[in-house]
Length: 252
Image (cartoon, rainbow, N blue to C red):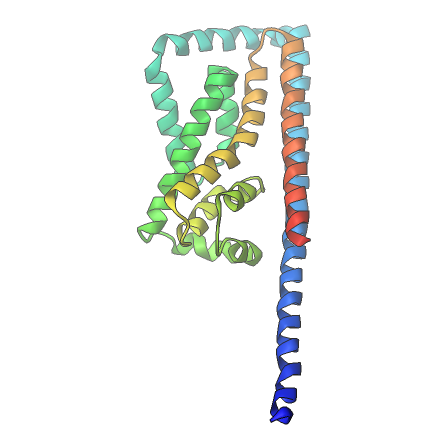
């Protein structure tokens, strides 16, 4: 009886070793993709902040200062519209995000039109509602075209097989098409509450950063504009470091 048992043991050991190597390879790939994505994100935000900062400096010391006056007049007009303006923006933002438009320009626009706090709140509500709409459409069956695009990120599909709110938060920090993430999550068994909580928390950092940038475009004070731009950079870098740490912890 000892002979057959001794023959089976090496096969079991090899299988375990193979599984361990697969998990290690997957963790390495996730860490690599996270690092690449965060580097791209930091570069884009840095370029945006530099461009906006330069524009604001020129606007305060050249005839472009009329821009600031026009923005203030536009904001006063929007304030007069009250809740109608808020509701219209939320609806437009939700529809845009649901059909796949980039949400970050919408966040910057909200900050410019409504100011930082109102713009952040409105863009966050609109973004989450739009993502949830795409999620619900996926659950209803409208998913084939986007799933074909998702084949470009096989590691992402693997990671989202058993999604938690923390994983949803994590992938929301990466420079991936939001519509693809919404559809991928829609075909998993993720609970609606998990999707909503992870998306809300996941959208918050970059919504804060881009609302700060947008709001900085309409400030009458150059110092305040530059302070908000630096704040946006700080938010992106802190979140990038946290996500990188999460990837390292997963690998360990």
